[in-house]
Length: 318
Ligand code: DGY
Image 1 (cartoon, rainbow, N blue to C red):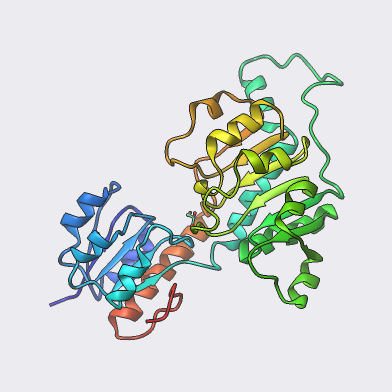
Image 2 (cartoon, protein in one colour):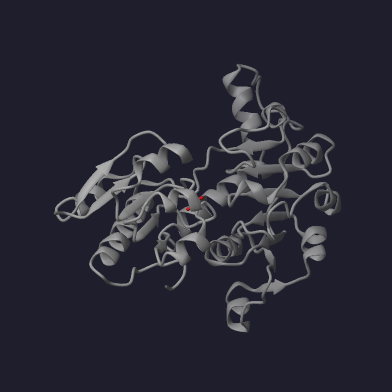
């Protein structure tokens, strides 16, 4: 009998094509809730998921489970401890989405700096009456200071793009990178407080953990420059949304570019009413090439585990 795999939501066809000749692959189209997952996962040895809540209870409901393949680089949706206890592999999709996510981050930076959504809305509403010397003035990026919170692969790819604007790069995370990495990006490791005070653009690229959860609240926004641009294309829970709304409303900072939200997919209604922000629907890795590469990698991880081998990109070793 073929081993069974559940793909919990629609992802590029290539994953199915790769797995279906060898395994019985069931595909679900709509997103499943935690309780729906609990009632569905019983017969499966592998799950291919897109940020679904894989709680201890879901894992307990899946006695045959050997691999949880996350179709994302972040894995804060999985109870890692519960998976470890059962010796279930958890995998993610690092590297293949680095460049696309860095590009998206830069789209947000440019959009905020040049007030693109405001301009777009003006044109669409028929309010554009010709060029005006004082209309929608934004900020130059040339030579500015880029602050990066979380200097992993994506943070570094964002820093690399900053060279095109001759930016100074500051970064903060728990550990300092080796000198070779700092030299490669001309990046300076600074205390968190300095990152807040000196960044013209402050971009979030850390994983969501107990330590990074709500790391950016009223107190932090208060310390940033009034001209600063805050970008979050990582995880929404790293900033507190109501505090960000206050910071934008009171002009403690210039603008914010968000691809992720604290209560995703819900977005604070106040945020929707503010002009000085760019809001995207979690598009970080959303390019055809990248999403196909993520699907191939997730499928490969499952195939390796179900063939008795170590997956290519495990989140931890078992
Ligand atoms: C990731 O890979 O973690 C992204 O947020 C999902 O697109």
